[in-house]
Length: 312
Ligand code: RIB
Image (tube, rainbow, N blue to C red; front, top):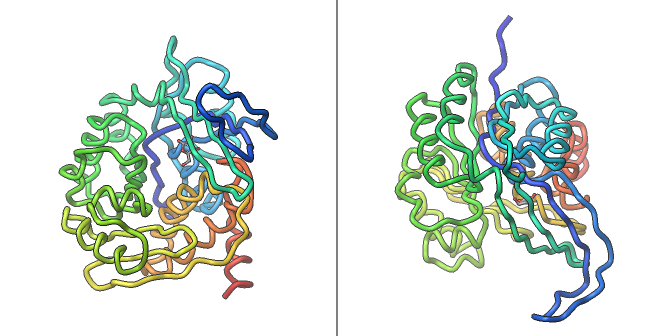
């Protein structure tokens, strides 16, 4: 029997410490906020869960990353396991803390994130070697920028050498990385990251198109700029177009980009057409913003199918 390809997510795991508030304190001020909860997160973890819920065991999602030997690490691993993600290549390291993100969510769903990467900062060459060992059946590798630049460089080189399609979410933006982006298949900056990468202020379709063309010149096949509620810009050799998103009332946009990227990884294995893949990723991301939580906000396959049918 033909074995389906694997989706490899190489990257970050955080415990999100979420505070819901209607205002931010000034310096030296204390304010009382509305609600607090913890939620397994990290861009890598969120993307893996988004992909796994869509893959629904048709494709295996394998995670490569690192947590500390603490309660947050234990909870994150338990959650990934529950989502049918292969965690055998997540290292647990003593005496370092698992990554955390302190997140503030406003009533309109907008948010700000302060992250301390902890164990993610120790993702290193030994994990690039683990990737080498498990990559025989890889159909796509999904990366973000919450791990050290040096490791990102190594894993990009390794994946390119093995001709494994690469999707990079260049978040958060880090300076001086564009040199290592050459030969990436898909890059998915949001408007802030696209502005930083291109030095063009991205605020609408026209500026997104200009920025996407600039970023493509780094040697990238496909540039997909996510513009929040203003849609998506896709730029490839043959496509240069805007795709609308759905009108959605957002509860929390914390992991919307991750929902998009995880779904895109799944969709590129499923579809040969990039516009169809982006459509599916938009639907998955639209559902995620109607829910709170990070990994827990990701849409299941049947939910995305139903959403696409009823909103077509
Ligand atoms: O993209 C959202 C994620 O970014 C959060 O889950 C948080 O952990 C930060 O890494």
